[in-house]
Structures are given as C-alpha cells and as structure tokens.
Amino acid sequence: MPESDPQDPVSARYPNSARIWNYHLGGKDNFEIDREAAEAANAMAREIGTPAGPEAAREGRHLLQRMVDFMAGQGIRQFLDLGSGFPNMANTHQIAHRADPGARVIYVDLDPVVTIHQTALMAGPNVSTLNADLRDPDQILADKRVREQFDFDQPVGIIFVCMLHCLRDKEDPWGIVRQFRDAVVPGSYLAISHLINEGDHRKAADALFEMSQNWSAPLISRSREDVARFFDGFALVDPGLVAPAQWRPDLHNPLRVSAAGNNESQPVVGNVPVERLTVVGSVESHLCGVGKKVG
Image 1 (cartoon, one colour):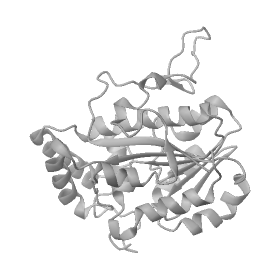
Image 2 (cartoon, one colour; image 1 turned 30 degrees about the horizontal axis):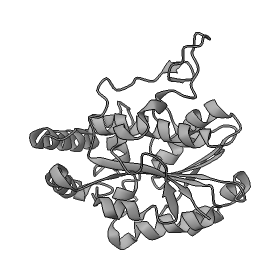
Image 3 (cartoon, one colour; image 1 turned 90 degrees about the vertical axis):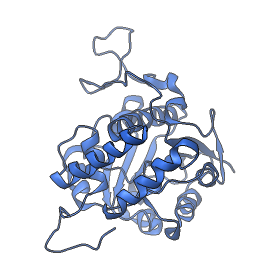
C-alpha cells in the first residue's frame, strides 16, 4: 500500500481497492480516480472475455450472504469480518441478526475512512468496528473491544471474503490465517474467497495484477493448491473449494422472512429487497470455501 500522506488523509490521489469495490456495487463512496481505475479494469476484462468488476462484486456479496447464513445455521453467533470494506448491501451483521439478533459481529478494516463509515452506518447492539491491520492478528485479538464482545471459549466465524488476495506472499497470508485459527476453539469456521490464476483465468489474473500495482492494494491471484493451504487445520464442508456460484446455491434465502408475513420467503435487509443475480454462475475467476476447525 502506498505510504500515507498527511496532505492526502483520505488517499484520494491513487485508486483505493475498497472504493473501487464500492463503485462496482453501485455505492457512492468513491472518487473519480477510483471510477477510472474500475472502468479500465472492466475494459480489460471485457477484452479478455472474463467477468467484469460489477459481476464479481455482486456475486461475491451474495456469496457472503450464503456463507454467513450457513455458519449461523451451524450455531455460530460470533463473526469476525476481516477486511470488510464499505457498508453495502446485506452486511454480515444484518445476515447474522436474521438468525439471532444476539449474534455478535466485529468488522475490521485498515482504511480509516471505511471504519468511519462502518461506525456511522452499522454501529449498534452486538456490532463493533475496529480500525486495524489484519496483518497484525495479535493486535486485533488483544483489542479490548474484541475481548469484551467475544467469548473465545465458544466458536467463532472468521471471514476473509475477497481479502487475502490483497496480501503479498512476503506478508505471509497463510501465517496470518493460522494465527486467527489458533485463537479460536474447534468447531469454529473459516470462510474464504480468493482470486485464482489457473487455466483460462491466468491471462486475466496477470493483467489485473499489473493494473492494480498503483492501487491501495494489489490483486494477487493464486493457484488452487495455495488457496487450499489457507484451510490447514480446517475440514472443508461440502461442496469443498469451488467457484462462488457453486458454493451452496440453495442457500439463497434460508434465514430470510417474507416482508408480507406469509410463508413465501425472499431476501430482505430490513425492508429493502436484495437484488439477486439474474445469471448465476457468471464469475468463475474466484475459488471459495468454508472450513470447520478440527480438534
């Protein structure tokens, strides 16, 4: 990440990955430089014939919903969302609270502007935001708010959705995941989605990496084997390590209730319907999975 500049506290002089993702999701928390970078990446994707940013972002958001739904259905009531990004549609606490309003959620993000938005828009009972660097797990795990809100004698859901591919190999993302794994009890879950660089996606992965070199964080695609290494100490639940659209697509609305009050369920966040993708399975440039920590 470029060095912080006191003359540019919101980092408006270079594209910011969180703001680019926000733009892809139709948000307004972005600048012209972010939109230009996003559209350049989209043009590259269209030229190569791979999914563009809006497709990947929307499908990734729906994947997050299904993963949190699944973990909540397994009894998880504590969620640590690492690198959570700007608030947008169906945030982790909104999904978890449909299963249990008492579920506890902590959002962690390095970007102070993201944290300000999270605090303003998502603060509430059982929800906390933490401005911290996930590359320092000890700092996060020792934070007073984390220790007070979480009971580490009970299982935790650890979430790295579209985050680990922003870390370089020299930053040891596998070691970072391992530290969080070692801090939670057996029965905890790990949810990950990650860019891949195999097969038809290799050319796009290389181009995206080069294009993201002047962003706030690079986009580093990895092999299936390297993504699988994140799950050391976890048993992958069915269907294993797959493309986002293939991960439990039946979980599109299991914990949602109808706004009309009848038996027909629909995805809702408060009273705001969540748009579903009309073409499911359009994004296969990622791998994702959920693992359960074994004893």
